[in-house]
Image: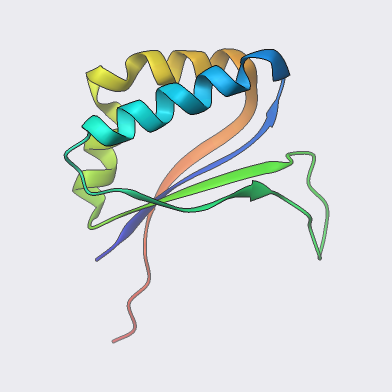
Length: 99
């Protein structure tokens, strides 16, 4: 079953966002977990409200790959920079497959 990592955040240091993007892309190329970015855009709520204005969604073949990718030691620098220049939340969820 597919799994997704969802990043929902505000950028708190616009000067370093380009560095984060470069590090993320380089880390993704080295990864062995077959991830792909399926959403990377500004959030514009059509119902309710949100103080968070960016969303990135990665898709993985399964929950195991998503967890391994997120906790992978080789992407520690990406995670630390992201946590330094953004505020928001991250979650890992399994996809939905109807019976």
